[in-house]
Length: 115
Length: 115
Image 1 (cartoon, one colour):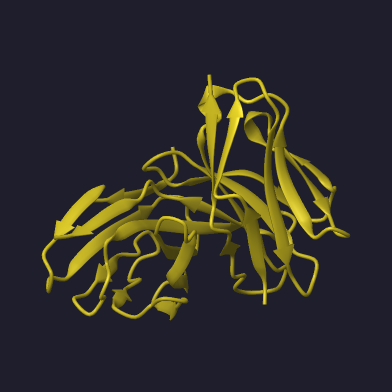
Image 2: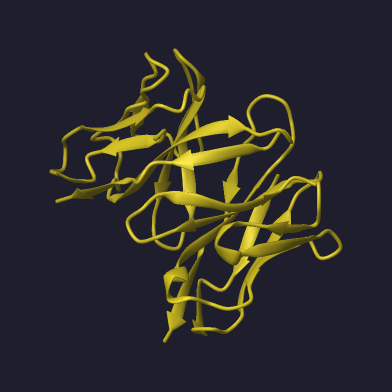
């Protein structure tokens, strides 16, 4: 079955460490996204990529970095510059349906806790 | 600018009762509107979407939503709640435009179903 795989599911980090969250898709979608979810705040866009070797900052990109070297992969690095990194991180890819609407498919998420 | 407001961060209903989750949108042009569901520690799953084809939209698991332009609303309903409906529900909006379509999410409504 096609889908999005995020790993690890749970991750613990000490302050000052960089960590990388993996996101792999086999849906053949061009566009991929990273969201951050905090209780009561909904989903906030960190970065997005519409094609390979191109990506754009979202609303809360500070302290994060991404790469898009392959269509299938869009890893997110949470750097030590991110002041409050404890959150649930969601990766998504996009398809455009027959009406022109962008429909997102999400991975199961990665929960990062800073100790 | 586009936005969605979900009224009520928590909603409780009895099993078998009507489910009504409220969403109001703000958009300068006719929008695309979505409802997604999230089960604990999972990603989001598309329930239904409105793309101007019909104002009453039917989705998965017996849910439906009605687009009301005069009220700028897109409320989610289900005639009879099941225990399995307990989850968090997100309303989202995007604009029909070429290229990148930003999807803006509401802050979510947690649905509790009481036996």
